[in-house]
Length: 232
Image 1 (tube, rainbow, N blue to C red):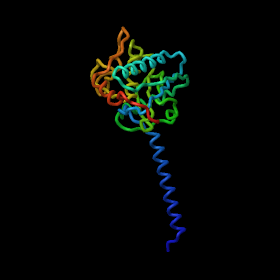
Image 2 (cartoon, rainbow, N blue to C red):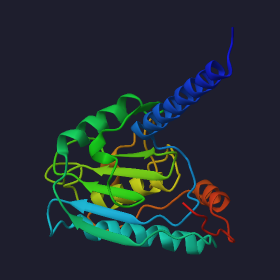
Image 3 (cartoon, rainbow, N blue to C red):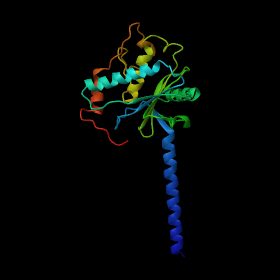
Image 4 (cartoon, rainbow, N blue to C red):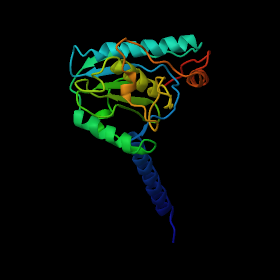
């Protein structure tokens, strides 16, 4: 015999189960990241640049990269801008960066877990300036609301080569803004699966590699003239 109390208890049990499933799915979503997805920002992203060294010269290179992208948005008549940029000095989780870089490299179009150490970083775009050797990368997580850029150390090639670090940082920031790779080594966003590697940016005379016309058109579509920020 089914009583009112038993029905109420069953409904309560179903509700608890549904709530538990929601919590589980939310937890999973927070733990999953994707590599270099072409997602446009709905708000102007703040950038936090983090290094273990207060006098890290790459702080200035990030500023230059942000200036390059904001100048580009102005030139294509877009209403979108990047920034502000905040500099922070704190220890860098080098081993976690290396592990995440390997995950991106081996599974560039798939999903993978992101370590807890990366989930509470400041900034909508967090730029970690590492000191060890790994392949620099950009990932998207938290439903495209956050981007993480990992930049390898500059003690050895290719980032020790002149002009490379500046363009590599601008390249990774391009991913964080929604652009993918092209296959032309004359342009900033050249990369895998094309054989372009950071060495292509080497130059004894400082120079910023440009974007392709197609990339500018893509940016114009993602961030049109009347782009206005929405709530994060």
